[in-house]
Length: 366
Image (cartoon, rainbow, N blue to C red):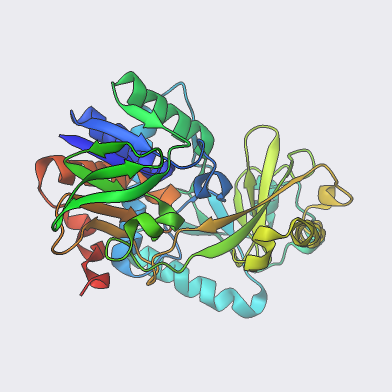
């Protein structure tokens, strides 16, 4: 079977790797360079909490298992860091966190409570006076993903397996014969044909090549990331606070984003606005991590997240169209390995995966 995958982010790279290992002939196409899109501007938190409804939480939980299984196949390329995550709220919001914990426990997701002293023992860089006495929710299965190492490793494995990976190669049209998709046309006019074409374009999944009837309805959001030297913020785990989130980002850096995750779209086009927002975020974070006071050696980026209109994944074929698959989701970092495994099996065997049943694109195409 010949498969064309459009998009070389965490989803596309994962699918290409799984498909080629099942014997498919795989071509990966991306309009940008490696890790130049959303996958490279993600907080990359691997987690399965705060993700209702139950079907979606179950999918994310299984996604963590899939990541562990995939990482085990590459023991010398460590991209998965399941350090655990700690979350606390302002006192007025603590009951909501307790409700979340009760729900997760009922679903069988391992969580427990830490007190202030235990959190300070785990994160000694935190300012004692800035840590509240409200309980801290500890999720032991969670952590973060080095997306660059992950994507590079999988795409290199695709090439080693005989597949083709072409970056800086925009797709300008989808080739169709009636209701069957048979390939793509590139910007240079070249036509490529395949048995299956898979849209893994993330926030670009509704771009012109897929219009009018191959594009899912999206509601993307913008995010801000600030990368600082780890000496200024030497955190050891993913830490979710009432105002910002922070995690390690390799041995030398930490990564910070606003707690609500979303920022104004204007920041994506305004370097001055980004710098001002970053300075405000760091000033806020310095109350908890004093080492951030006065730090000037930092990098600021913004990213736009892929988010289907209803917030849930769109994974599978479209009704009435053959030869074409959608694979677009928020939480792409957490779900990449699992969605790739399930989708590769579906594409090659034709057998649907029950875990994906609640997330078919049919709901958008009536």
